[in-house]
Image (cartoon, rainbow over all chains, first blue to last red; front, side):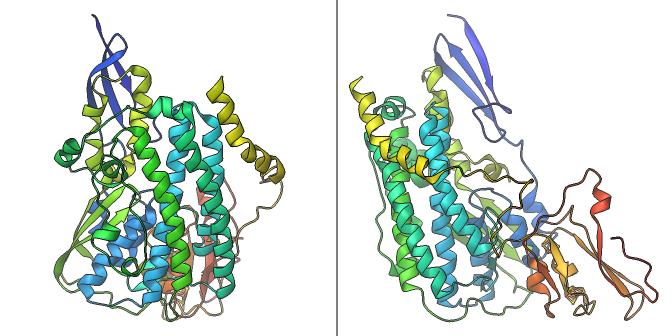
Length: 360
Length: 131
Ligand code: SF4
Ligand code: SF4
């Protein structure tokens, strides 16, 4: 049979960010695939060495347009470890609150993108409508919808009044209702299942071999979640489930993400209930003692790792970022093998790619 | 047929909710946008409070602020909105509460040089401000 090479990207309606795939197609089936990255490489890691720790928070926030807060959280966590400061617990709670809101936002956004790519526009509209609620909450708390700029080394720079806390709890109740409806759609809607079941399957063995993280790993039966496995405050005092499925296909990933969204709403509510009083930040020195540190956090897409080395000045000597998308991207060639051309969009969506994160 | 009917029934409450909510479109720029109180917008300065310490300039990650110093007390604080990332770091760094972010948008323009504003002018005989 004749082979046809189908290029997808770097600019393609299917892709929200520039990445390029070359699919070799025989008949209706993909036989080979190649991938090219680097279209949004901005040299952020190198730029970090030219800027102070204070400036770097804002620079690193711009690595990603979805999970921006988790990047600054991981960075600040690392710098705080180098400085040896202990954060007030209120600051830790508020930081984690935003992390969870961001997870809800990221998963709802992703559900919308998946729905759009499989031609299920209704769910795209509903998911993005509900995501607006989270964005409004985050904008109200931090002053920005995507770049929150709330983290500082030594704490956060926003506080919650008691009134605001009560309104937030009410908003979260409404949000949970909506998220449960979307969860119901994922569980029962048959057109969605017809498109996503048995597509892009990854076995547990493959997951281990590729070191996959996050919801993609959890959908294939690997029970990992940094929030539970390496709990730091406030997660050590909260109760939550880590949803795990065994199927390993795109449907399982969808379900895991939606179940996680519900858990995140619960977590937000618990944090608001348990929010300790006190200050939200401590003063820290601008110069960071020489040393190196590895900081890890569970981002919406999986574990994000920062390596920071300090030479004792007010600028880092090295910052290295390992984002979850990079490890998950590597699975794509094996997922794309032998899939029907029409399912390529489902496979590509299922991984929840964040190319800006991967390229930095 | 069977399963598609079920899907429609499942989503019916959603249709009702959306219809009840009414239109969500905002008529911006024909009507003023409704921005939250804490929205990080245009940078403004209370010139009387500014001491020209340049802490805001030092910490600005986007190099959007500039301090032109001519003497101990003579300086100009210049703001370039085309570079600004609206991060609010200047507000946090200022020890005198002089600079802050207001919840207004920066106006649009086709010529980025016209955006630049002199926030504080402490030169001996200040010529008329840019705006
Ligand atoms: S808001 Fe941020 S980028 Fe803009 S002037 Fe202030 S510090 Fe600079
Ligand atoms: S605005 Fe504040 S930080 Fe900036 S120069 Fe004036 S007093 Fe200093």
